[in-house]
Image (tube, rainbow, N blue to C red; front, side, top):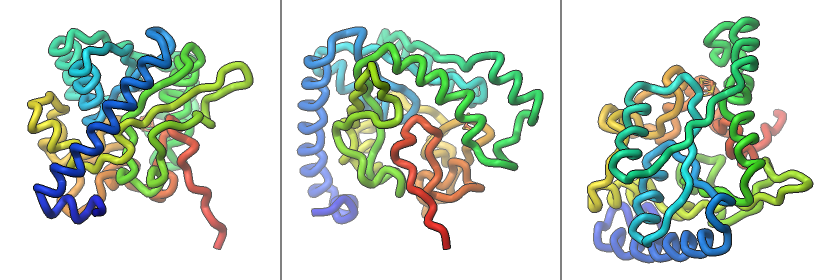
Length: 251
Ligand code: SF4
């Protein structure tokens, strides 16, 4: 049974989701047993991450949560952080970029340089650097990556060594407990469990990132089509999951 046939058959989807749910719960238990509080955290941004918070709570466990506040997020996203914080009594540590790095970039290239020369430089300053600083304090992190999110994530395993952020002195483990879930699984879980979600999803935004780099997509577009829509699909990673990037083959 593949994910697509499950999506067209609700009973089959229910069964396969149950199996994936068990896998996810087992992995979350394993991760939070192996890595003690303070040494593991969840990176929070999208619909997948609220599913993970909900699952962790229902397992009777707790997790530290952080999110990257790039300074360019939608107001709806900030409001969503607040909803999650209050509904789950869950502190969310907001990671801010180094002000000097932002000032230097904006002074040299303005506020929208990513439309001209790609998103990597701005994401590097606003996302990757603060994330690197945070991950240097951890032994493991949990993400909401899914294999069907994009071509860059089709091989994402449930558990991996983080090749992008491990250092000589810090062997970092990355857990992707929803790797095998489909988009339909996520939304089925959210509706069934009445889990809060970013209101932008009701306005055609599927994958939500920074405001200038995210647009709503039409019904038959891929969910990541609204992210950095002016760039190649194989390059659509902001550096958080840089090991997924597929090298461009020269033609
Ligand atoms: S997503 Fe866009 S605005 Fe946000 S950090 Fe990356 S390039 Fe900058």
